[in-house]
Amino acid sequence: DMGSSAKLYTGWDQDFAIADEGFFKVMDLKSNKIYYTRNGDLTKKQNEYYTGDGYLLLNKLNLQKEITIETQSYSIYTSDLFMPTDNAVVERSGIYFIFSSVKTISDGKVYSDKLEISSVNPIHTLLLMYNYIYYSDLDDKTKQYKKEMINMLINNLTLNKSLENIEESSRIIEQNTQNISCGREFYGIWNSRVFEKNMIVKNYLPFIQLD
Image (cartoon, rainbow, N blue to C red; front, top):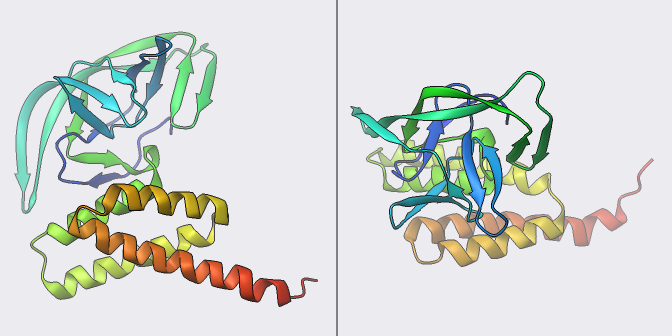
């Protein structure tokens, strides 16, 4: 997304969300091509941060302070961020952008332990939400309510994607979540929704007459 949107607390210190306007600067190490993104779903390796696609983060993150509000702890960083100039040519590929010319936003504010919802994979976002609820100190009744809300989102997501995309997503989820308790629980819910959709599409839709 080109602008700021709602932030999701994940509790993972390698997740980052830009507070206001601006983009991170990343580089594809295979082609040395520069991209700009608001996606802060990062992984730290040998003191460098990388996106899920393996792009190197070029921004320097400067820690300013750590904050705890109720059960949520996160840090505030500053970093030089980037925006396209008014006359820049903009190309987009998913959550990555190419700008023909940029301007710098000095000391832009960045939060750790949060992700901007519109800038990440929706399946990964749902899993992060589930992870937070699973390990939180919420009472059982509140946890169950929040899980049901996520179940509704999963159901909506599976109903609005093609079977091919859903089945591929299921394989990815299975590969990445089977080693953690919340992941196994999430995968079970996801898989049941996919099974229900398969049953509807394969057994019921062929007999429905469309006007």
